[in-house]
Every structure is written in C-alpha cells, then in structure tokens.
Length: 329
Image 1 (cartoon, rainbow, N blue to C red):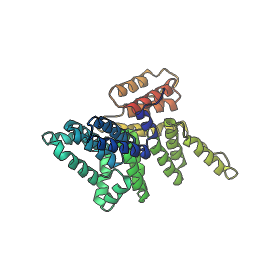
Image 2: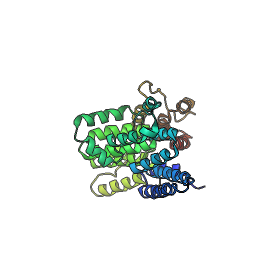
Image 3: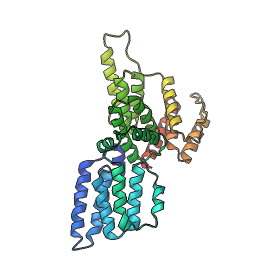
Image 4: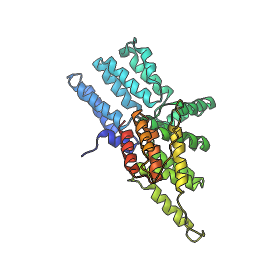
C-alpha cells in the first residue's frame, strides 16, 4: 500500500523544499486563473495546502495559502491556518481566541507577517534575529524546557534551531535541550543521529551509541548505530587490549529511564515499575497501557524500550506499535 503524504513527511522529518516550491507555483497559477474562473480557487487552495505540507519552513507557502483564503472570504480558514503556524512556532494557539472578534479578512495577513517577522521559520534567519541578544537566547532556552513540542513539525523546527545554538559553541545547552525535544518526540531519528554525532565528537562513546541506537530503531533504513560500531572497531584494531563493546544493559536501561522522566509532565510522577524478565510482567504492561490511554505516548515508548532492553517478551512489538502511534498523532 502506498504511503500517505503525512507518513512520508514524518518519516523523512526534513522539509521537501523542491516539492513545496512546485506546489506553491501551481497554487499561484491557479490563483491567477481564478480571475477568469472562480472554480480555479479550489485547485489553488489544494496546491497551497500541499506546498505547506511538503515544506512548512518556507514562509511563502503560508502566505499564498492565506491569500487564497482571503480571496474565498474564508475567515475561519485563515484562523485555522494561523493556528497551525502557531503550533509549529511553539506558540499557544489559544492566544488566537482573543482575536475571535477581529475581521480576519482585514487583519489575517498582518498577524501572519508579524508572527513570521518575530519568529522566522528559516533557522538561519531566526538565528540572525535572536543571537544578537543574550536575553532572547535565554528566553528561547527556557521556552524549550516548558513548551509542548510533540508536533513533528515543531519538533523538527526547534531541532534545527538547537543546531544553530550548538554551532555557536553552546554545546552543553544543546545536549540538555536536545534531550528535552526528543523526550517529546522520540521518533525524530534525525535529531537522535545529530545528538549521537555530538557525543561521538566529544569522545563520549557510550552516550553516542545510545543515541545512534534510538535513531536506528526509529529509522532502520539508515543504520547509524551499525556504522558507528564499525568506526569504533576500526579505531580499536591493534591499539586496544580488547574490542570496543556497546553499553551494558544496565546503562541502556538507565538512559531510557532518564528519557522517560524527561517525557513526564512536571505535574506527574514516573511510576516505579519493576521490570521482571522471568515473569509475565503484568504490572509493566499495565503501566504502558495506562500511559497510552492517557495520551502519554512518549513515556510509554521509553518504558517499552526499557522492557525490550531487559528482554521482556512482547516488548519489541509494543515499541513498534507505540512508535507508529506517535507518528500518526
């Protein structure tokens, strides 16, 4: 069965700029043709939506979609578009409820432009705006610690922003905040791989392996963990009394416990669950089920990964189910 556009976007993580540009160009052509035949507005909107789907980081894709909504007089649609943008920017969409009495046909474009100017979608432009002010950087880092960035687009956008923070020399802040992001969206394999590369450069090989392991579990098509193992083995050949070994199970479990704690809302507590390989472990399966039923899929994912690391039967199947659940959210 062919993958849906959403499935492809989630799996690839990164925006597909060329497809976004192509669909935006089609939307603009249909919008131009609508002057003679209003039926073309329907095709224009469809193409504009595809442009945003393929590349949510290009502000022009959002602009053309709002322009089309203005042409159709769809005030509710404009507000829905702005809601989506605010989610990606890590803003509280409820802020828009204050604008319910405002005529979106007059103010929608202005609100869009103000949001894009204050919080550019392009990570390099964003860095140019924020890096000149230390207070702004501090505010950004505090926001990452408290925002809901579980939406895959928001998680991807903020991952790119954290890479700019890392490249400026703030490695420790990057290491902390990247984990905060990944706790909310553990299927972000690209960010796991970037985190692994940072640890590898720092000579923190066990941490690197743990991150690469998460990346490969979530996207087996790119075997970054296996490639890292080969690099380590080639480094050790003839220069070490023994081969390099992956972290022990206890280290993996401790790592996953820390990630589960990060994924737990501040008003909740991580349940103390004993993992028992020899038993059927009904308590831990019940805890995973409880977390999933409460919409806390990220916590459930890390708990299931702990179970898999401990060798509990059925845990790996559970990991795959929860990963698909997160990607479909």
